[in-house]
Each structure stands twice: as structure tokens, then as C-alpha cells.
Image (tube, rainbow, N blue to C red; front, side):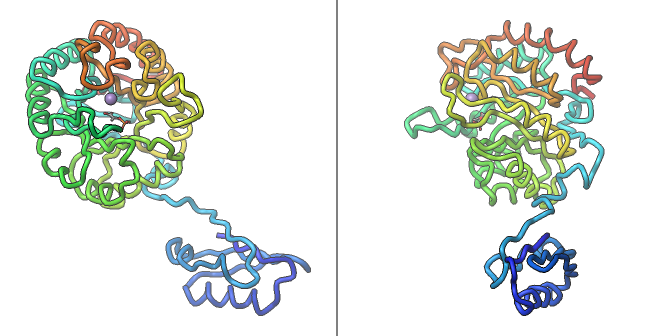
Length: 341
Ligand code: PEP
Ligand code: MN
């Protein structure tokens, strides 16, 4: 941390800052000339940041040099994290995840049909929401526990692990009984109580980027989960809010490339929610793999016209199979493989 003093700050003002730092166990290194003094601070990050030096007399600016996250950072752990899901699937470190399935679980028939076709096409994990975060309280809210049961049943029939959303921290244990990966939706990315809770659970977490979250905020949210002891976190870029309205959100692929450098955690891309348009999903999946993503998440529905949620962005199984064929050479090009163990 750097404390920049105002021009001509008095000797007493400077000394007061130094005293506070030293009392807190930090070292203060002064540099400067006739006009300006800058104090370089070395010490425990939490203690030093907690000092609130900004408002003190003579202090112009406090500059935080250290990042607000540690455990998720690549400086802390240079090698890629590989997250193992269920018994046979992994993601990260060259293992690519393809997570496919409907926006929401609607019926036994729908889930079985979609699970069979996604598995046959090569998806590694099955998705489906039993608890849905809907903008309107009048929209379909999901089937709840019955949805979890149907999702599990379909996944077991085809031998795939499942990813499903925990919408409320009160449901976390119930969802964990059925799911292999606990999804934190975009709207809950900064639900810190939930992140704390999932940090204590023994299941991998898929953390989706908030609608207007910066890269630093995504990483700080992931830090909560790791700090609780759960190291199995997969990040998900799912588009952010911008002025553009043609697409549902704006897919930030630069964030994927940036995150690969900043963190060791795997990152998957969800072009379904990012674009909201079926015709853009396949091409953005390919772009995601080329940008270095560790996988994609795609909404697939056997009958999108009658889907209870997100039909316009859902692929039919045939289109999903075609997408999978087009991804194979790109995955190879990246020196990666589909994440089956
Ligand atoms: C979802 O994946 O089901 C979902 C609701 O996505 P998001 O939280 O990214 O909007
Ligand atoms: Mn959806």
C-alpha cells in the first residue's frame, strides 16, 4: 500500500501516519522531496487496509497495491486447478467441460429426452434448473425438489453428473443431496452468505459472473468460497449488461482470456444467456474455446417453442450435436480433451 501525502504535509501529519502504521505492526518507508512525501507500507494486508488512513489530516490518497483476493490468484498457485466432478468428469488443466441441458426442468419426459441426446452428442455434464431466478414473480419459478429428482433420475440413466442452481442458501443442503455441481447464478454472485455457506460444502461450485460485475469482483466472490475451504470452483462468463439490446447481454470473451492469466480456476462460457439468441450460440461456443475457455454451458431443449423458460436461446438436440462436432477440432487445437476421466 502507498500513502500519498498532500503537498507540503506537515512533519507532524506524516509522523502521525507512520506512528499508526508502526503501532499496527507495519513498516513505513518514506520517500519524497521538498513538496511531496509518499509512504510505502509493508505489513499484513488485512491489518493495513483496515486502518482507514484516507481521512487523516495531510493524507491525499491511499493506493492499494495488493489485489483484494489471494487464494484464487495465479500468483498464489501457478498451476491450473482441475475440478473433479462426480466419478468420471473433470474440468480445467486441459479438460474441457461441455455442460448441456434445458434452462429449467419441466417434466420427466423432457429431461430423459434431453439427457439422452446430450450424452449421445458428447456433453460431459447435464444442466437444468429446479429453482429458477426469474425477473417476474409471475413467471415459472421451477419445479423445486421434484425437479431435482427428475434431473438426478435422467442423469443417472445416462451416467452424467449434474449442474444445478442453488437459488437460496436455505436450499443448499437439499440441492447438494442431488447435484454434483452447485451453481451460483449471476444474480447471486455477491450473495456473500451463500458464498460462505458453499465454501463449507464438499461439492464443486459453478460461480456465474454477475450482470454488472467486474473481473475483480468475480474473483473476490470466488475468494469467499475458497476462503471457506472449498477449492473446487469453476467460474462462468455469461455476458454482462451493456448499452446493447440486440443481444440479451454482451459476451465478454476478453474477460475469459484475462481471467486465465489472473486465476488458476477453470472458466467456462455460457453463450446461451450471454446472447439470448439461438443462432449465435454455436459460433460463440467455438470462439470461447479458441479464447482459452475450459468449457461451455449450452441450453438444449427438445421443443424450444414450448419451453417454459429461455426457448429462444435453446438449441434443439440436432443443432447441439452439430455444435459438438464443430468443437472437437478446436478442442484438439488447444491441446485439450473433453473432460472424461
Ligand atoms: C442459468 O444458468 O440457469 C441462469 C439462470 O443463468 P444466469 O444466472 O447466468 O442468468
Ligand atoms: Mn436459462
